[in-house]
Figure (cartoon, rainbow, N blue to C red):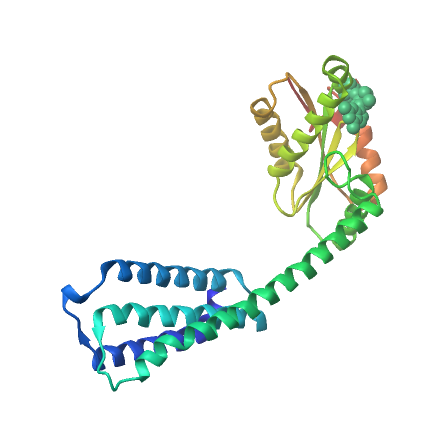
Length: 300
Ligand SMILES: Nc1nc2c(ncn2[C@@H]2O[C@H](COP(=O)(O)OP(=O)(O)OP(=O)(O)O)[C@@H](O)[C@H]2O)c(=O)[nH]1
C-alpha cells in the first residue's frame, strides 16, 4: 500500500522538514534547566503514537476519499506533535507568532478530519459486512455449504469441477483426491455421534489448512472429503495424499484409517469424473491390489 501514498507522504514530510528548519532557524535552544523532561516524554509518546497511526493507515488502506481524511487527519496531528516537542527544546522570539499557530491549529483540524475519516471507515465496514452476510446467506440458501464442517458440499464441487473442466487449457492437469475415513461408523458407536461430529470438524479444519489457496476441498458425504487440485498431476496429488496420511497421527490421537484415492480428470463431465472416483474408492476397498487402486493408500 505504501507506494500508493508515496507522493503525498513525500510532500507532507518535506513540509514538516521545512517547518522544523524554520523553527530551529528562528528559535534558540533552551537551557537544560528550563526543559521539562516529563512534558517532553509525554509529547514524544504522542508523536510516536501519531506516527504509528499514520503508518497503520498507509499500510492497511486503499487509496480513496476516506483514506485521505484519515491520512491528512493523522498527519496534521503528527505535525502538531512534532512542533510541540520542538517547543520543549526551543525558545521562539515573542514576536514570532507563526510557529505557535503552526503548532496549535493543525491538531484540531486533524482531529476533525480523522473523525470524518473514522465515520466513513465505520460506514464502509457496515457495507462490507452487509455484502459478506448477503454472500454467506446465498451460499447457505443454496445449500452449498456443509453446516457441520463449514466446507463446501457436493453441489458446489460439481459446479466448480464442471467450470474447471470447461476452462482447462490444453495440457493443463487437474486431479481429484478423495479422503475417506475408514471405520467411522465404529468410531460413532464407540465414542458417540457428537464426538464423531467433533472429529469431522477437526479434520475439515486441518485438511483445509494443508491445501494451497487455489485448491477446493468439499465434504462429499458423511466421512468422505474430496479435494479438487488444479494444475496438479496425479503424482503430486499422491504426494499430498501421503503427506496427509503421515501427518494425521499428529492431529488425531485416535487410531484412524485414512483411505485416499487420486484420480486425474480427463475431458469428461464432473458427474462422470466423480462417479469414476467413487468407483475407484469402492474398488480400492474391495480389491486393494486392482489397477483402480493404483493411487490409493491405507494408513493406520
Ligand atoms: N458423527 C457423524 N456421523 C456421520 C455424519 N454423517 C454420516 N455419519 C456416519 O458416518 C458413517 C459413514 O458410513 P460408512 O462410510 O459406511 O462408515 P465407515 O465405517 O467409515 O465405512 P467404511 O468407509 O466402508 O470403512 C455412518 O455411520 C453415518 O451414520 C455426521 O455428520 N456426523
